[in-house]
Image 1 (tube, one colour):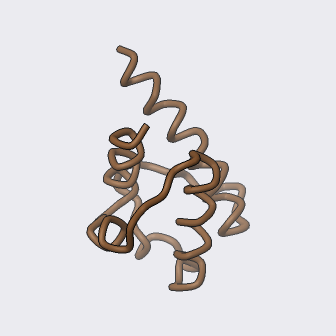
Image 2 (image 1 turned 60 degrees about the horizontal axis):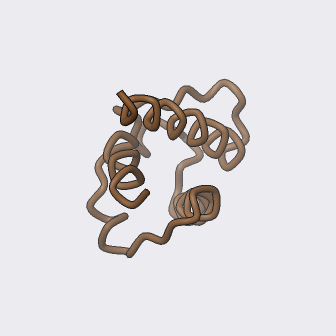
Length: 83
């Protein structure tokens, strides 16, 4: 139960971050969301996104960890594993 609550909070925070980085208040963050789904998700915004997420959660990710992620759901799982 606690894990579900954590995921809800994580997705809420991720939604704020994604909307800020991509300047799109209508962006819906789902576990299936990928870079291909967001027009503005280029390499520069990818870096901004990762840095913003690291700051917001007080975490640090290696390039290898980030490079293996296939979607936002996997990113959320990585965040949970580090909290």
